[in-house]
Length: 184
Image (tube, rainbow, N blue to C red; front, side):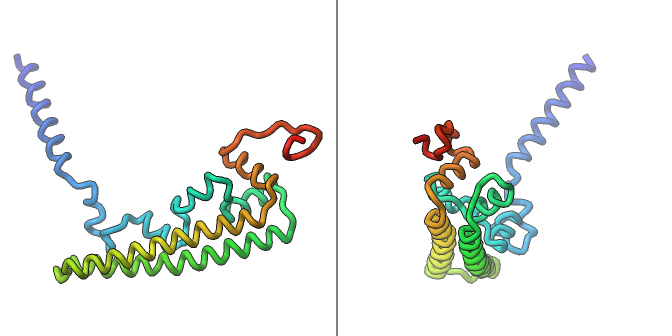
């Protein structure tokens, strides 16, 4: 009998703890951060100018990313002429510079939005205006990354793009017939 009572007590405590866990917000750790609307990883990505998956439409449709191309060339997995490497470095540097600038603007706008909520001064019209600015900047950030993929594609041959897609796991390697990258 004491074992049954003990078991029931353990089950009751577990159920109580589970019920409390369901009430705890997944955002609780952000409540102490300086910018509550974004997590630490999102903030770091925006500051660094990283792609954050914004260029998947290009990447998955045969428009390589400049950073990944440069990494593949450096690893000896993708062959490129020095002029191509120089051009892709220029594309990457421009993309990175512009993405960091816009990422910083997004963070500043997010901080302003946060401050308006924190001070309880935000109005519906102010909310809409602030969100539209952030949305416009996020669109600009995406355009920067997509444009870099477009320019990188233009700097590469079809055979290089095919090889890049194979390296990234987007395409099955083609058998090499008579040394031609296109099999003919």
